[in-house]
Image 1 (cartoon, rainbow, N blue to C red):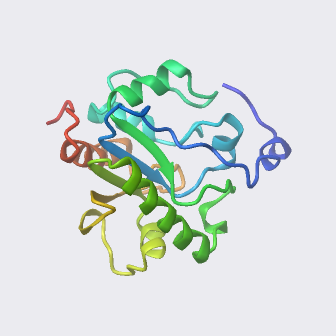
Image 2 (cartoon, rainbow, N blue to C red; image 1 turned 45 degrees about the vertical axis):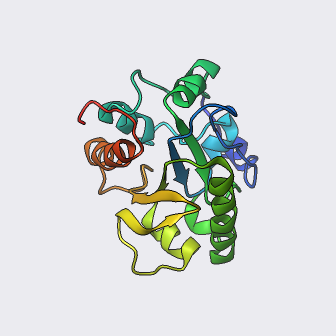
Length: 195
């Protein structure tokens, strides 16, 4: 695993990380949407890459992926293809890397919601799972939204809001994340170990 100095990580502030999407012609069943890239994610050009992020351990525990993925040093093309072959994509509400999501403005999140809607309308996933309730509420102007399936879809897709896997979200565990992600995956038609 690489070790980045604070100065090295700071050099990635405002960098962007491209979406990970199935190739044209491959089925996009489930699009996970993070809030925005962290500095470690930007440094490795890999979504949810920080070593304490629980995203990939939760996917594995839920049976959404069938082998471990350790993204801390950057995801291999084989790892990316494993996600694509399972019908999984990853995007963000905001594409600018920051040290903390709280550095994003409400305007950035609202603009990101519009961009996400356009992406969903173009790529047509079955389910969109936004990982972060506070950012979702801001991006879509829904201050009372709660976790779980949303009655209003998004761009023709079923919409879920799931917990954020960041290590900063201390009241979630790999097990609780796996439960939430597994529900969204089953709604998307992805077989899981618990479904």
